[in-house]
Image 1: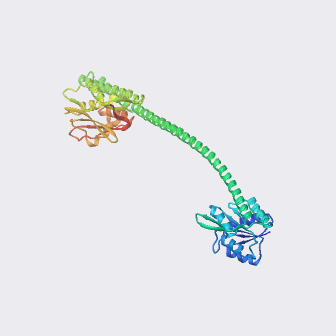
Image 2: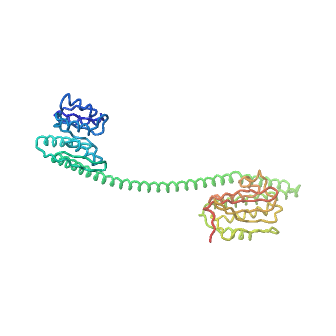
Image 3: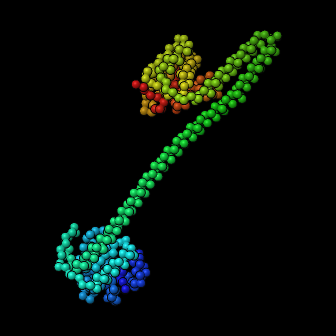
Amino acid sequence: MKILVVEDSRTQAESLRYILEKKGHTVTVAANGRDALGQIAAGRPDIVLTDIMMPEMDGYELCRRIKTDDALKSIPVIIVTQLFDPVDVVRGLEAGADNFIIKPFEQKDIEARIQEVMATQTGDDVTCYPLEVRLADGSHTLTAGRRQILNILLSTYEITVRKNAELQEAHERLNLQSDQLQQAVADQKKANRDLQAENAERVKAEKALAEANKKLQLMASITRHDLRNQLTAMREYLELSLARREKDPASAWTDVSNAMDIVNQTINTVEFTGEYQKIGVKSPVWKNARHLVDDTGKYITLGRIRLENAIPSAVEIYADPLIEKVFFNLIDNAVRYGKKTTTIRFRYEENESGGTIICEDDGIGIADEEKEKIFAYEYGMNTGLGLFLTREVLTITGIVIRETGIPGKGAKFEMKCPKGAIRIKP
C-alpha cells in the first residue's frame, strides 16, 4: 500500500517509515496537516497515519478535512497518539478517525491497526445518529459508524490492557529491584559500620603504638643519656674523694656527699621510669574528684599550709587509675616550690564543653616563660618530674592541663575536662 505518514518529529516519522517499509509498503512523509493535504492532492495514498500535535494544522483538523471532502473521505485515517486522556479518542471519533495507534508503538500494533482499518473499509457499517458526548473539555458530537466506534474502542482497550499489564510487570520488577537495592544498601551500611569499627580499632592500635613508641624513645633517652651522665658524675665525685681523702679529708667528704646526691637523683630517675611505664596500662576509671583531693592531702606534710577543698562531692572524673598521682603532684609542687604558700585551694567550674578542676595557691607563682616548660621532661629533671607525669596521665582521656596563674601572686593549674571525662553523679 501507499501510506502517507504525517509527523512533525523527524525521528518519529523515520521510525514509522522504517517499520512500514519493512512490510513492503511505500511511504511518504509530511511535516504537518497542510503539507499532507498538498501531498494527497498530488497523489492519493491508500491510508494516512497522522500525529495530533503539529504546527499549522494538527491531526484532528487534517482528519476532519479528509472526512468532509467527498473525494477524500474514503481514505482511512489512523491517528497516532500517546493517549494521555480519553478526550483524545472522543475528539478523534468526532473528527472521523478510523482507528488509533498508541505511542510508544510496536510493529505488530501498527500492522494490526492497518489490517483492521482496511478490513472495515470493505464492509458496510451502520451510521449512528449524531451522538452528544460531554467530557471535561466540553461537548462533542459523534457520527461515526457503530463498527468503527466498536473497533476503535476494542483496539484502544486491548492496547491499554496490554500496556497496563506491562506496567504492572515493570512495577513488580521495580519492586524486586527496590528490595534488592534496599538489601544492597543494608549490606553496604553494615560493611560501612564494620569498616568504621575496623578503622576505629586501627586508630586505637596506631595510637597505642605511637604511645608505646613515645615511651620507648623516652626510656631509651633516660638509659642512654640521663643515667649515664648521672653515673659518670657520681664516678668523678668518688674518684675525687679517693684522691683527697688523705690530704684534704673535708673536701673528700664533700665529694662523697655530692655523689650521694647523685645516687638519690638516679634512684628518682629509676622510680620515674617505673611510674611512667604504668601510664595507659589499665583502662580509665571514674573517680570522685573531691575524695582524690582529701585522700592525697593525708600523705603530704603540709605544715602550716592550709588545704581547701571546694570541689562538690558529686563531681567525678574519668581518667587513668594513676589520677591519684596527679593530685599528689599538684599539692606537692605547691608545697615544695611555692616558697611563701599558705593556702592551696581546689574548686570546680562547669561549662558547655565539660568542666574544669582548678588547683591554685598563693605562693610565688610561675614565670610566664616557664609556664609550658614545667610540663617538659627535660625541665623536670631539675625541678621534679611530677608535672610531666601529670600531663601524660591526663592526656589519656583528653584532659588538658595548663598553668594560668599570675607570676608573683601564686600558681594556678586548670584541668579542662571534656564532657566524656567529667560528670555530676546524683
